[in-house]
Length: 481
Image (cartoon, rainbow, N blue to C red; front, side):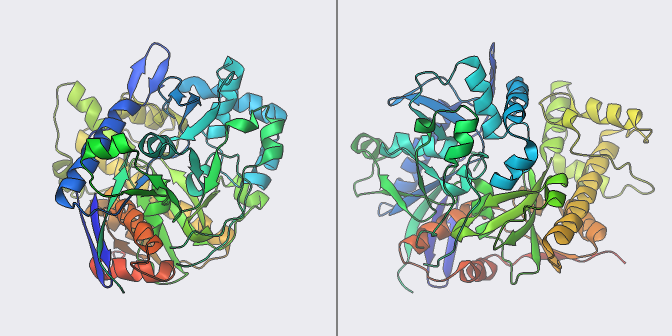
């Protein structure tokens, strides 16, 4: 994504898109990271061709997954978080540290694929022997571009191995072009969060594999000469740290106007919650499985993962494999016309996590729980969307109660913001006004952090969000009477 940011200017356009398809081998499910890196180079080449004076780039991606390196060499393709190998890591970790103690230190919700459980599985398998470095996905791509090995704090906060901490600091100038790279798709925050050396030691992990931490807005380094030549860059091009967890970047671009707004970053996963100045570490919060993840400027993203649009995309993939091709807009339009009771199921049941026949799994869940079983694809799509909206509403009520925040409005950004049915049902279920957009919130937040780091825009997150609201006016959905 190529962005232009300046005083009262915020524009974004795609210059290259590419698929991100995992690959299953005999030893499990992996990311095709070399293909992703090749496409990053293709995208940067396209950006430089369109904007020869490109000044910087920033990378964001999904969280928790990583590569292991010996020296400068990657030791195998990174595992996909949906791989089944982490079960033993969960048990091994909880045998050493009680879940309540983990939460008190890292504030993270329990997800079986959190990085600390994956690393525990690697330790049990002997895969950490002779490893020099662990790099999360955006940091790995950044290393290949610049030769610098670092870990950006917002993404590192999802590993479970960072101590809870944070801080905040803000950062008309000229207009400049910046590239945002998403592998899924200021001044530096003064952050107190650092690697939790005591926890790392208790878990038997080698402290030496965890790289130096940087905060969003810091310069990582310039592109290596060979990389610059390959993409056709004739000028120095810096890679800047952004909110490298894609949700951290997305939340920067949520056009919230006050401290009573909630957010839903709706994509493959739905991240549902509120932004806070400090974490919530109560036992009630842990029991409700809420997470405290690092945000840009030391903010806390207090949220819970909801299964998300994965349920729809995996259903479409299943139907296509079975010989029935459906267009999602058609199914959604038909689903909006469904009258009468709609089956609502628990979208976060573990059976829905792995790839596979999602329609069959949903029908099986409904049958096991005495719920009406959706028959046609249209009925199933309506059930998925209604169930997602119900999960959003339940999660927002819990976020309000646990944080003490009175929520007045809900912002939906990302791919789900284009789904009229989902937005309207969320308004109906929550009883709150839903403001939808922007769709490309992650890339927008990415380029805004770059622009502020270079002094092209100034101010707090509030001022950045005001620029987003001006450039991308949200659509409003009010609760049905």
